[in-house]
Image 1 (cartoon, one colour):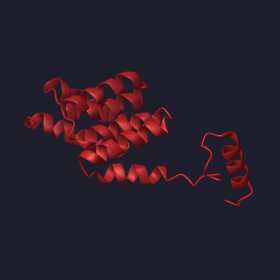
Image 2 (cartoon, helix red, strand yellow):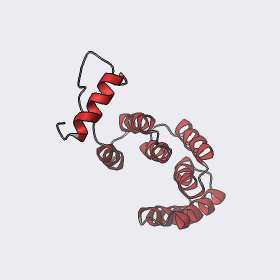
Image 3 (tube, one colour):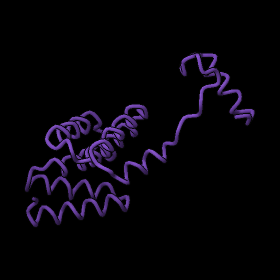
Image 4 (cartoon, one colour):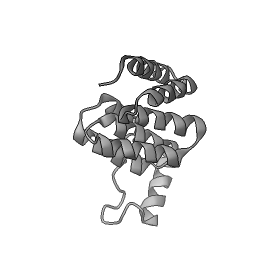
Length: 147
């Protein structure tokens, strides 16, 4: 359980993060973490560090440490997945989001997965998705609006 002062700072951080003010949220999370070490605070701080400062490797490390300390909390997976999305690593982000859903139902993770959408079926099913025939046929058919 968080101390009262830490909880207030954390709540302010989450509120400002949801409003899109990442710099203010970063400040709140840093202050809260100084007062009390907590994996949830570290996880949210990690996302802010990656988004605001571009320190992605540090952020990934913080999130993975939070997951190791508290593997059942889906917010760690949400934040880590969002960090991977910042790095344009969609496949890794989707895997992390799915891991989070295995531990706990989280509507924010579901919303992120819905935003990412689903892939269309393969043009030639017996070939791999990465096969150049499937890839370029898909591109051509999409541009011709036949798919």
